[in-house]
Length: 160
Image (cartoon, rainbow, N blue to C red; front, side):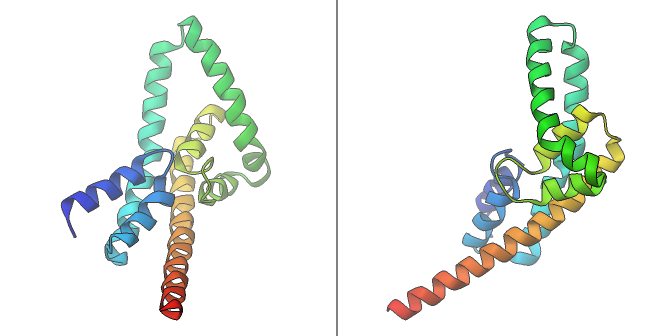
């Protein structure tokens, strides 16, 4: 287990585009032990919630009186409400966890936290929901990655 591999895995985990969806398959391909990889990725990805919430609150307070920021913020709010509001309205914080749990590019800890912040949801409940969603997502991604690697290995053995 090299420092570079762990560092790249951490970077993938913290990037909004890849999050767990990229970090776990990368770590598995680099043969990082699952008992290290999955908890490592869960912790890093779950940290996105509190860090992003604090960042958004701070930056918003600093920029809320700037005209261009107000326009961009209003568009961002409308977009986030459109994506997250229906699930949160229907299922509450569990809906937020399910939204984060779906391992697709427009879902995850970043979008879930942003949506919760825009909707003015309770930060502590948001962190718990994001953490639950990240745990579920990690299980799904690990299972799909493992099955994909096993299927590929099986196919390669059959061809040779």
